[in-house]
Length: 286
Image 1 (cartoon, helix red, strand yellow):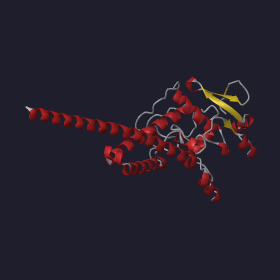
Image 2 (cartoon, one colour):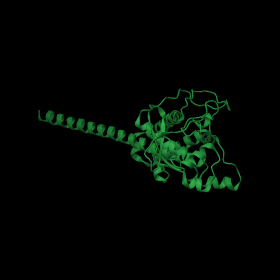
Image 3 (cartoon, helix red, strand yellow):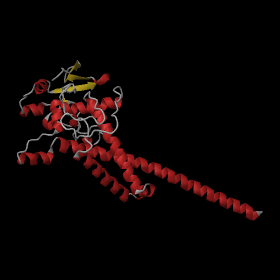
Image 4 (tube, one colour):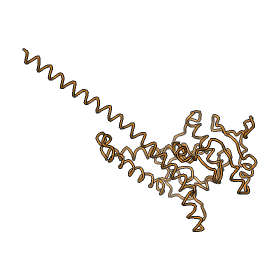
C-alpha cells in the first residue's frame, strides 16, 4: 500500500512538472511572438523612414550625389507631391497612381522583402529563446505574411489620405504593367482617432517644404522621433527665406508660413495660422 501511495505521489509530481513546463513553454512562445511583433514594428518603421527620406525624396548623400552628377530629382513620389492640393485632394482625371500605392513589381517592394527577411533571419539566429519557439521557416513565412499585409494597409490608408480609392488590379493610365494588389483595398474609418492622427501626421509632411520637411513615417510612426524629423506644425519660414514661390500653392504657403492643422470627420482638414484662434478650410484646387 505504501509503495502504491508513493508511486501515485511520484506520478502526480511528474504530471505537475510536465504541466508547469508546458505552461512555461506556452507563455514563452506567446512572449516571443509579442517580441516578434514589436521587432517587426521597429523594422517597418525604420524601413519606412529610410525609403521615404532617401529613395522617395532624394535626401542626404543621395541628393548630393544627384546634384554632383547634375541629374534632375524626379520620380513618381515627387510628382505625387506636386499634384497634391493644399486640402490633400488630387486632380480628378490626371494624377499619378503609382505615387499613391505600392507597385508590387517595383524595386521598393522587392527591397522591403529582402530587408525584412535579412533582419528577421538575423533576429532568429541571434535570439535563442525566439529560435527555440519558432523555426526559421515559420519566422520567414510570418515575415512574408506581415509585409504583404503592411503593403496592403499602406496602400489603402495612403490613397485614402488623398481621397482616392484604387481598385485592385486596376490598370495604370501611364503604365499597364503596374500591379497594385490581388485583393481590394479597404476604406479606413475616417472617425477613428488613429486614422485622424496618421492623416494629420502625413498632411504636415506634404505642406512643409524643403529642408524643414519632416514626418517621413506614413503609418508606423517611430523613427521620425529617433532621427528628429518629427513635426507638429507646418513651418515654411526657412524654405521661403531661400526660395521664391513660383506656383499658386507656394504663394499661398508663403503667405501662411506657419500654421497648425486639424482633422475633422469625413477626411476634412482645416488650418489655423500661428497666433490666431480661427480655424479655416483650405482653398480648393490649389
